[in-house]
Amino acid sequence: MKGEKVQHQGVADVVSLRVTSEKDIIKARECARQVAFKIGFDSKDRTLIATAVSEICRNVIEHAERGEIMIESLQDDPCGIRIIVRDDGLGIENIDRAMRDGFSSGDGMGFGLPGTKRIMDKFKISSERGKGTEVIMAKWLQ
Ligand SMILES: Nc1ncnc2c1ncn2[C@@H]1O[C@H](COP(=O)(O)OP(=O)(O)OP(=O)(O)O)[C@@H](O)[C@H]1O
Ligand SMILES: [Mg+2]
Image 1: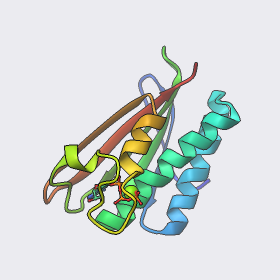
Image 2: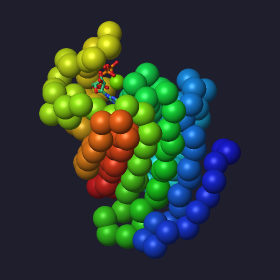
Image 3: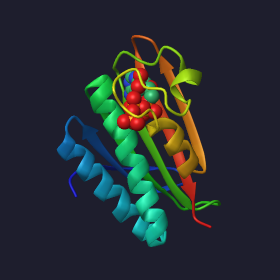
């Protein structure tokens, strides 16, 4: 899997990938699945993690054009996977509204953000109008 590998404290492995196209979403999804497998997530959780990655990366392409994803394997207590997705697009005007089931500023279903929050154990979104958006999410190995 292409991507830059860097080392951080408490983090066993980090893979960083750009997100600019549908192809990149597939790569990021596959990469997250592989990292999750190495950590020990079962197939159901691997699918949930891959779905979360797809939704958040698709948002980057649809609502911000381009961004990057970092996928980290956490070996400390708790053990798990952390995923950070950033873009420098237009940002989200109203995060509470964006997190509501069924809200979409486009013609989407509006389930990407709230659905992903339900899938993951940790989900934090921050955004500044005109500066971009950052999602930090994690799932712990049970
Ligand atoms: N990275 C982003 N940059 C700017 N706006 C965003 C970003 N991600 C989400 N949004 C805003 O939040 C809204 C809700 O996102 P969400 O993923 O829940 O729904 P959607 O993308 O519109 O539709 P769906 O994901 O169901 O196809 C979006 O319609 C968009 O306005
Ligand atoms: Mg979406």
